[in-house]
Image (cartoon, rainbow, N blue to C red; front, side, top):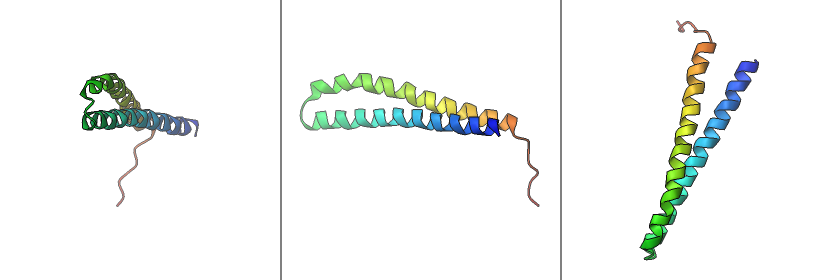
Length: 83
């Protein structure tokens, strides 16, 4: 039971990290669009560092989720197909 609880917690952490990266990317996109609509094109380049931070965070969350998924496959025994 401890292994399953550990995997559940890792999935939660991976989802939150992925969500944080996606929110950061969305905020960056919205801020850039608003800056362009308001005619403040010079501020658009200032949002580039946020996008540069959001992408690795998304990748990290995805890597955690994939690693947990693969590790679960090695821990849980195969179940026979339903007849």
